[in-house]
Image (tube, rainbow, N blue to C red; front, side, top):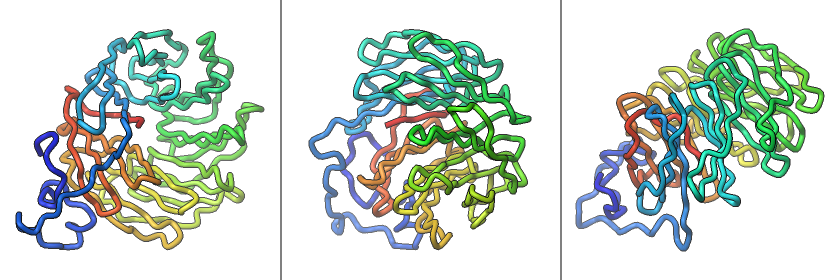
Length: 336
């Protein structure tokens, strides 16, 4: 739809959400109630990375691109942002990580050591520690001050495509195309556990910071699996997606999750019931990234080849608030 268009239910046709999926008829123009502004009194921003090798900063209220950061030599696959201090770290298919000053759009430093594309990154900003995962089968812990590798976590036998960190507990869960999940101790730099059960590459994982032993994973085998890591037991295997599961975002206290897939659909899950609560459709390409504000009931989804678009959703009612275009390639990473 046109940028800045009034937020009303007529646009359900283009972004079929929970209501449209349930077969609600479209409203006539005279039935439409104007919707309230989604971000009252705030200036929300988002940073995205793309196949076009750039990172872009967006004003989510207007959908406008505020800044563009260039420096990577290949696709930007992941990004993590410290909005308070206006800095970010991105990982790329060029095998490096980059540290950025978002105020000045300056590339501060490069982190080199991986021998394959860097597809996951996490940061503990107070201690300036960075964790990354790569197609070279390894996870690396970095010191952002010196840009040096502190430790390399070796064990996976194929590319590491997913990771989820609990910094407070000093643990990280990783997922790989070797079809396993691994739980690591970041202090001892050791693998605590290998979790098997998926029959395809694991592309998405989430580790619960609430209890430390619950985890969710998504795979090429189309399943979303809920785990109890204490025994490496799969509690629930949820099959609703028609194609590979690519991304997960979990609200652990509420036991709800979002999953995105190559089937171009986002599913909202009730993890206790192991049932879908809503489905969000509209992207013409693979769902490649999800950034979810569970409290504000909104999310941003980015999509892959043939789409190159971001969508902003109000998932309290499945409404697509805005489509954001500007990247000249697939959008692989988003942090809002």
